Length: 448
Image 1 (tube, rainbow, N blue to C red):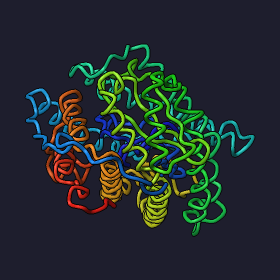
Image 2 (image 1 turned 45 degrees about the vertical axis):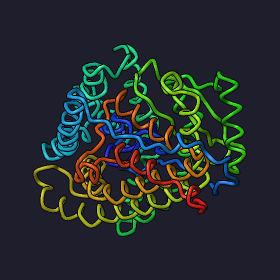
Image 3 (image 1 turned 30 degrees about the vertical axis):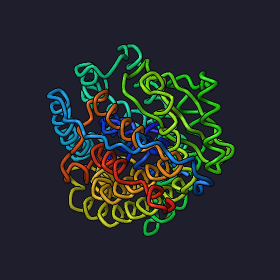
């Protein structure tokens, strides 16, 4: 929950500055994330800072030689189609699980069990939450197993052992329980004490926690799942540091993470804010990319810092959170009045209303996702342009996306509908085309 954002929101919490649009980001994560994220809307995002401070020397003609968009292989087409089917199935399942728990009356029965403690309201809330979280986790294990473990192995994109997958799942469950214990009481207390303004006060409480998550995730949460260390190639690191200096970026650290224990896919991303800001590159990427390709990739990540995407992203997500909480407020009372006899829940402040809050947040998150994804795609396009302005290496930049298409079975030209509903990044085909045509310095003009 604290580690990942809702499946409907573009990318994982604090990691959405990624260079490459990972298929794993579309996995079904509601079972681990929704409880805490619905309660306070704790969504993370990480990008961030200024504009390039200089230009490289005039590139050789090969640096701007056009690169053709490769045709997807039959395996990539099957991966794309099965991914779309999985997206539909996981979305519907994400709606169905909380709906079944709530409308079947199971949630009310869990509340009755928790009330046997009859010592303290918080203790009742925690007993209910633990029981609910375990049921929610169990209900989603089959789909999580297929999307996170079985399917990547089927397509040759994962090297993860079953033990590592299970360990990560249990770690996520543990983080959910800790997160719920820390913050779940806030919205339910507000629902009891300020029924007409709970959504606004919850938002006021949620925004600082959102920033806190963006700050602590890189240093406390992500290292629980993988080992992070300094980049081992000192020559490449020196090259990246020099590039950052030219970009006007100081204080951003570069980390290498051993994602090869989990996946064979490629990625790099930015994370953190303030003193925890960092650029993270997967060891799989370092193995697959040439030094020039890695440098261009890092220039893209620097663009997120230089262009202030972290703060802009947090602002957009905060506004979406406010809209989602307000829409929940408009609907939850009406639903409870109509189905109170069937569900055994009469008031939004009843802890048994949690599955309904999750269901409503999931629905509204799904509806609010297209504009958030559009913002994310715009940020990624800006970062692509920044990388080209900084390096003038169009050919290498385009070849990075070609390599991604071939290595990660990326579909280069997804349909417009799929982009609207799922894509946090422009398609690989669009990015190759942009690399081919964007070189204003050859026309005597400066880049943006």
